[in-house]
Image 1: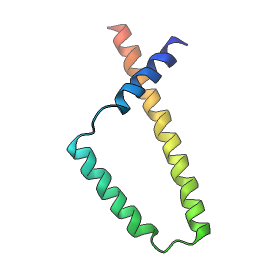
Image 2 (image 1 turned 30 degrees about the vertical axis):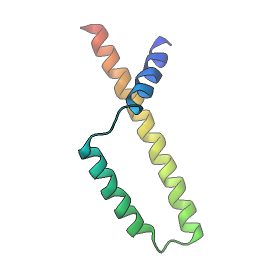
Image 3 (image 1 turned 180 degrees about the horizontal axis):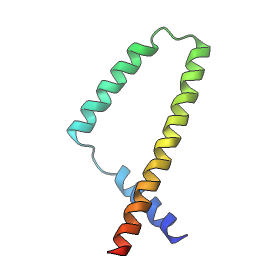
Length: 78
């Protein structure tokens, strides 16, 4: 599928971009909240939390690919 190559190219170029101040601020906030939330986790809870984080990350990656594919299809139709 040609769109898959284009999607990967767009994702790669996007990740090379400098993040906005708004993004950096939100990321800092999330890291601080996460550290506060996980400070007393046992090894087992850390493992569970890590697996949850991986699953959420995979979902986010799928969502990004779908959004890019959607935009590509809209641009083709214009």
